[in-house]
Length: 102
Image 1 (cartoon, rainbow, N blue to C red):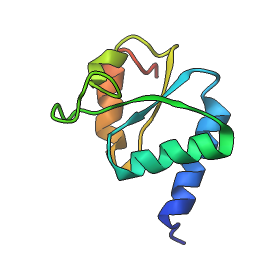
Image 2 (image 1 turned 90 degrees about the horizontal axis):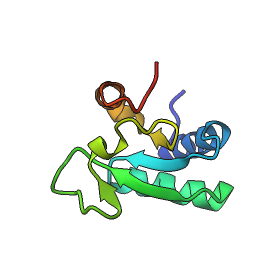
Image 3 (image 1 turned 90 degrees about the vertical axis):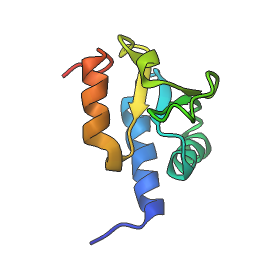
């Protein structure tokens, strides 16, 4: 059974709520789905998104969209939400930077 995108976004928001443990929430990627996840987190659980990270340097503004390197070594401070389409590539970059401990 295939879920629609609203169900998928709701599921992501629920998982963040269960696992973020008070850390600041960051969403990987600055695009429409990320905005929907941000809205669902705020609406359903009152969780604010601290900022987005994006590997596309043209989207980085130094305020709301930061480069992934900003997260290096900060796994205790940030909970990174990665929409599944990018998971493998993003996970590798986070592990190399020390943001994710496996």
